[in-house]
Image (cartoon, rainbow, N blue to C red; front, side):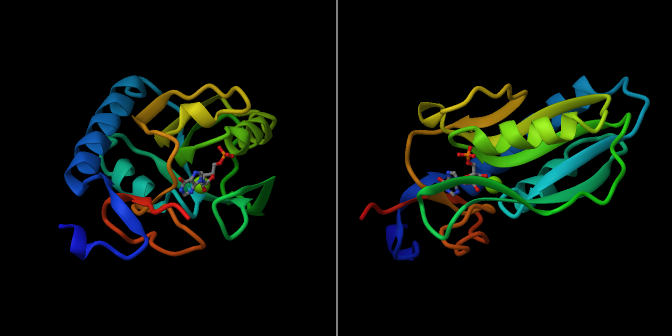
Length: 181
Ligand code: IMP
Ligand code: MG
């Protein structure tokens, strides 16, 4: 019900159930696609936004895998991109000759993933794929190939299920649209 939503949320965009079903669907597809892979699969969670998505997704991938985390910051404390992609935490694992599955919360301009993909590709990985929960295709500024997309969404600023507005609202179990202005 609307009155139960935090003040800044206009309305729910994706419910808990819709998220759960989509994550299961993505996990099943990834399991199928990687079933014959013999080398290590490393799931790379891009902090902080994709922490919750990664936690749910990796349990739907019915294959042995390693989990690693990379801290990436591309926004200041607001809704406008500072257009600078910074690595604020490096991976712990050696990724040479490994299969990488990068997990991202949302692709907006595409700048973050393009840069991260280039950086990781240069380390001699065996393969690299990208799985994003959300995609705002209308906002794209640079081309980046994405292998798995949960939902295409309109050009709205959203929070919840890991996504933040000035570091808040990440723990909401659903995804909500932030009120304008
Ligand atoms: P890109 O580099 O423009 O593709 O930006 C991607 C990053 O911007 C994401 O990983 C998010 O951290 C952030 N971002 C973009 N759109 C939203 C949004 O609607 N809500 C919260 N974070 C967003
Ligand atoms: Mg992010």
